[in-house]
Structures are given as C-alpha cells and as structure tokens.
Amino acid sequence: MKRIAKFEKVSYEQFKEGWIDCFGETDESEIVSAYDGIRLPRRATAGSAGYDFFLPAELKLAPGETVKIPTGIRVWMEPEWVLKCYPRSGLGFKYRLQLNNTVGIIDSDYYASDNEGHIFCKMTNDTNEGKTIELGAGQGFMQGIFVEYGITLDDDATEIRNGGFGSTTK
Image 1: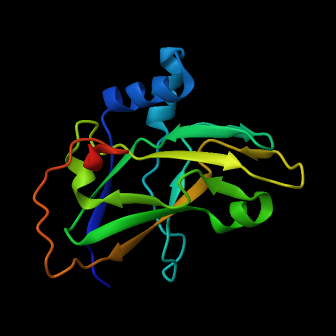
Image 2: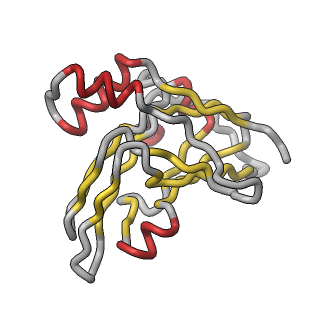
Image 3: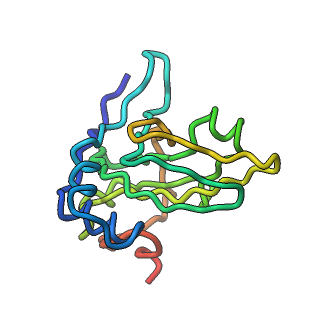
C-alpha cells in the first residue's frame, strides 16, 4: 500500500470559527470540549478502504433536516491524490443520510488554504420512512477514500488555491 497522506487537527482557533459558523455562538466550554474530543479519521479494519470521520458533537436530524459539521480535521496528501468523502454506508442505507454535494472532494492543495484546510461536511436526513437520526459525539458519520488521479496532456493549470467551496472558479 502507498502511504500518501496524514490527518491532523486544525488549530483550536480555526475549529472555533467553524463551530460558530455552523452552530452559532456557543458557550466556550462546549467548543473546547468538542475540540478536545476530536479523533483523527481511521480505518476500522486492515481491509477497509474508507477512513471513518467522527462527530465532534452529538447529532440529531429529523427527516428533511440538514446540518453543517465542522470536523476539526485537515489532511496533507501527496500531489496527484484526492480524498473523496461519502456518508458511512450503514447510515446511508438505514436513513438515506446524504452529503449535500453528493461526494465531497478534498484536493491536495486545500491543506494550505487560509482556513487550514478545515474539512466541513453538510448532510441531510433524506429518509422517506420518517426516521430520525441520532448519533453521539465521537461516532462515525462519514468516510473518506484516497484516490489517485491523472490530468490531460494539454493541462496548463498554474493557479494556487486559497479557500474552499468555489474558490477555484472565482
């Protein structure tokens, strides 16, 4: 197996900014507790392709509800690799838990962005069975899979990224 990446926590300041953006003003001790509890993504078994991401706080989503989650995680990876993020299989199967952008794409140059490459996830409980999702802090909710990619022979991209969603098309 190629070893091409390393997960890290973002700084507390970056996590706090993301937390407030997602959940609004919150008691500082709650943010500190969530930050201290962040677990780096990991594979559950030697044969797992996906790295499980863990919730920084408990989550309850009624049918049709959406939440934006600051993971507190960033990832350094070799050029020519991408991290593709999906809901954990069981949550998608049982609850139709969906990523709002279908598949999250984390490019290798996102790591150096102004927001430290902080990975966010926006999910919706898309159940058609009336099921509410309840997950505890520290529980797996998303999985990321590293994929190598190629470029076209005439590719001449030289721009440098600074930001997340939409930053490369501004």
